[in-house]
Length: 482
Ligand code: F0G
Image (cartoon, rainbow, N blue to C red):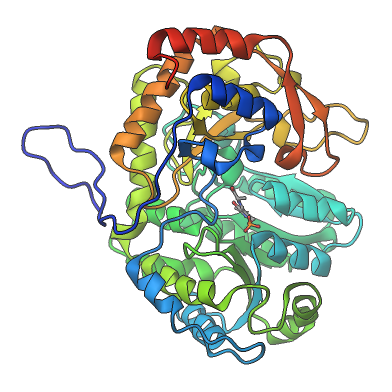
């Protein structure tokens, strides 16, 4: 929704929905949070949801459903093969994206597994504007490598550029020249770059990049998992797009790509995924992976109820009122914290508000995981669960040294239609408190370090007794029960 005007106060983001079902939240006393954090190995992924007040880990599979989505679930057609639900989903996606062939999967990384398995050979390169953890892991597992060619300006935390997810066309041309087009398995464009702060990519940049790829016969792949936020930003920020409907923009983007995949845990507000394949021969070649790894071709590992909900979710994504909610709440949170002097990734993007942890806790060396430490501290100071997006989320270099992330962030995701403005204000308050006490936050080290995607299940410990000291200061200001 374009901002609602107020009579005598500053406008705030407005929820264009009302609450119908609620879940009670629990704010544990401070000392109990410390005990839970220790049990979780200072890894917010390992916390139990019942011990969390504000769960801002992710927007994946935790978005609120609408009444229409829930009622659609009742008509799910539960057949192993030939489910009518599948045909409804395929038809809706064809209507929106103009691509007829759908391979259903259980979630986004399953799409990445199949695409990498099919196209990447050892030694191949995959061009990306920026990597996502699972999309890179699937390429490197097979022996390929990823070239991240986002424009340098995309990595500057504080900025007012509207499209920091844009790919650098000169770097793309140089990369194709260096690798040879035959060695480039595909170009993957992430619309809404997860790991650099949900920053969008412009339509114009996607068009130029895909034209360049096509000129060299390189397959173009769109990761549409975060497309809903990106659609909003194209509509409100891109020159010449204000008069286009979200539906028109969606189709214009889709027309640029050979393959489009998505995590339905984000795109469609449900839980599932899918790959759209333009070429019929290619589609049939890829079908085997679905029956091998996912399920039959008409459900691909998804619950048909979730598929029905997503069909409505796709349509709701075409509604500007609905897709504005995330970016507007995120924008409010980023703007307020920025004004309070907290180093944020600016401008606000999609997915969540991102704190520039490298700046906040500059006294913590990258090898002691500044963002990992800060995100653990934030749970201690208010029961807020964010996600580390920095060095801890990277895999080590082949020689065992740390791969230092270009951006070191704490992500506070805003699941869609879930949190109210007062909860958002609470988060702003606690982040500001933590910022003012940042000198009390110390580093972390691994005690159990998995080889792949270590951030999910790894266990760490603090390098000193900093959590106790931090909590002492917190309790002095807020009391033991908060
Ligand atoms: N691509 C992007 C851009 C994503 O953000 C994600 C997931 C995936 C692919 C993988 O999809 O989880 O359904 O397998 N991002 C989640 C997050 C995990 O929290 O940001 P998935």
